[in-house]
Amino acid sequence: MFSLPPTVGQGQTFGAQGGPIRDFNGVAKADTFPIRVQGLPIRINRTFGLAKVCLSVFHARSSDIKVELVNPAGASIWLTNRNGGDNGQHYANTCFRSNGFSGYIHLGTAPFEGEYIPDGRFTFLNNDTDPNGLWYLLVTDLRAGVRGNLNTVSLAFETDPTPNAGQPPCSFENPAYCQCPPGTNCELLPDLVILPRFTQTQIKEYAWNDPNYPGQLRFAASIGNIGDGPLETWGKQEWYCGDKRVDSTLRCPDGSYARQRIYQRIYQKKGDTLIATDRPAGTNYYDNQPGHNHYHVDDWVEFRLVKITPGTRASPRRRVIAKGRKVSYCLFDSGICNNSDSLCTCNGTVYGERNLPNYGLGNYGECKSMKQGISVGGYDTYGVMYEGQFIKLPRGLPKGTYQLEIEIDPTGSIRERNRANNLFTMPIQLSKQ
Image 1 (cartoon, rainbow, N blue to C red):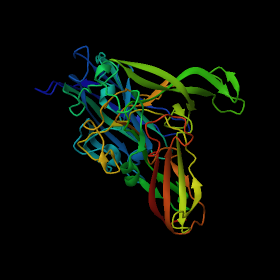
Image 2: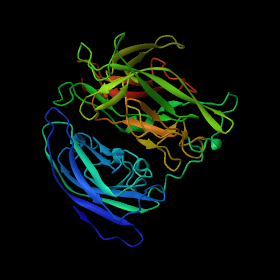
Image 3: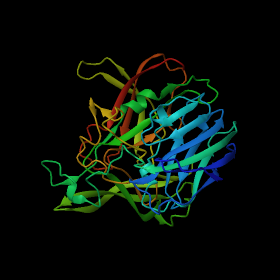
Image 4: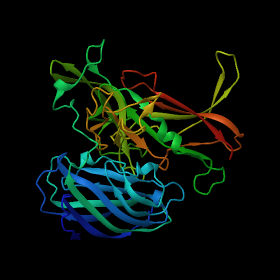
């Protein structure tokens, strides 16, 4: 490990040498690279904190790897997770900033060179804790067949580390600034939508005989919250195998993990305070698939491939060709919407700090068994290369135009301000089955 001398006006940079990244062997296990930080102020936050992470990774299949950063207090974010597509290679002197000029890492092209916006949020690391001590870069290979190497990694601490993430006026600490939606009893409900750009830019059909993803339609899906309050779920240690109450550490007789009953926490503004009430909202469970190893909420989305054919003018025939098997997500803020870009555009409106009155309300950085959620203006993204993020296409499916449907909360477990916008549809051309 080494520490670079301070740069005038730019704070201080700390770095470490890397090492080999083990290939996936059936069990996901991160390689851990420590970076020692010392001599900084004892609190990092929006005023002074981590501003940039740079790394160099040699890996001939960049979509195999997930890279996380953990601060000395144990908070962590994803820097990049399975990005690069089928043939992407290497992170060549790649840096991450909250306002990286090269754009979002999931929209970049490998070899990644320049400064990118990471898959996670630096504000979760600049969390009013002591930055001095050991930080850890975790690199996990999630698919067998290719080995890689981390060459170097460095952390830069500066003033105004997240210039595009101003302090939102409405927060749990300052509830007086939160605004009530007109014509309601001031319940601050979420409003969940699919953000089209993620799916439109990350979708691919694989041929029936593809060696890696035979007959799959793979795509990204990102769920944004454009409501008045956060989506927040809580577990209360009520674990079940079927109808039988069990200890949370036990597997069920069929080998699956026990399900925990979860509750949606709804906030209501009364005077200058927020009052919370809980209501049943389904179940969650421990997902041990490679790259996950955290808790997923059941029945969160449904993927459908649909064929529309002429019927009556008012009611064309709609036939479901196939459904996706992945219906559970872990819920957390992988990003936050900004009016300065078009990422969070739905039905012609760009959502962000200027048109979401309670923008930023909430704080959800991890997928824990007890608490998960999506902040107001936050979004939760599952990338095109994530496990289970596909529809299996029927062999011999005729060429033609079909419709992809992604429905949020298909069982109606969550209370929202508006459920009419929970269904996203997109025409697609298929030709490889």
